[in-house]
Amino acid sequence: MEWFYWLVPWEESILVVAATGSAALFFLRGCAVARPWLHRKLCFWGGLSLVYLVSHTQLDYYSQHQFFIHRLQHLALHHLGPFLIILSRPCPVLLGGMPSRMRQAFHLMAGWKPVQYLAHILCNPVVAVTLFSMLIGFWLLPSIHFTAMIDWRLYRVMNWSMFLSGLIFWGLVLTPGPVRLSPGSRIGMMLAIIPPQIVIGAIIFFTSHELYPIYTICGRAIGGINALADQQIGGIILWIHGAMMSAVGILVVILRELMLAEYPKNGQKVA
Image (cartoon, rainbow, N blue to C red; front, side, top):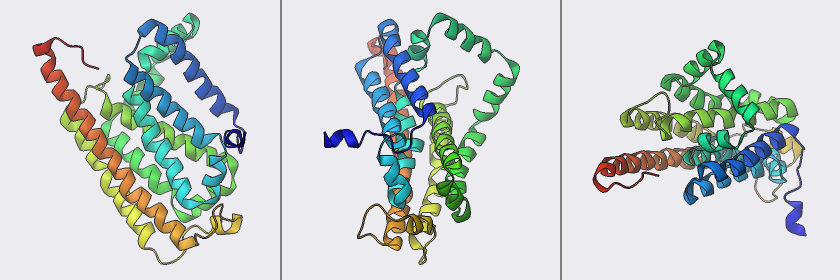
């Protein structure tokens, strides 16, 4: 039962359990109605499971006691998890799995002017790119990062902000959506987020002194890795792996456009 230990929450969060549990239940029920393709199911369950594992298991402890693991946590929350969830195009399935009253309330809320105005702002390409990139740098400011890591409330705000901004960004660039951005615009957005990640990652990697002493104060979870090595590994993760997600996203957009171009010719349904 040693494997079960890793699934035990380090710090319990009702919000994480409620959000992921509700999404899982609605998607499971919605599959009986919408019948999505298998690869869409795999993307959704993979993305949702990843977000839960890095947020509500023992991995969260290691994220709070090792800088490079914290970078991996945010790579999952900001990039890979939202990327996979959006790739599954879950909205029709989730709506189909909701109780009728909840679905009606959701449609009613979506029609409210304040909600529409907020959505219009957040779904603006410039705002989405700025928010996505700015949050990375903001939470990595040494003074802000120190405060966030010692205050559990701010720590959760940090993680939720990364996840939600990731959903907004990848939702805009991976699906045509209500904004109807052109393929060129979506590719341009993914290219725009690469330089800030490279710059921030390079700064962290090449800095010769410890930027985040909170991990030394609290004690690192993995022995044998000193402060600078931990910091450099985290910088590389942000520098390289974060930018690689944009390359994968660009390939997805190009592939879908090619499939759409072929659709009238072969009559097959585009996934």
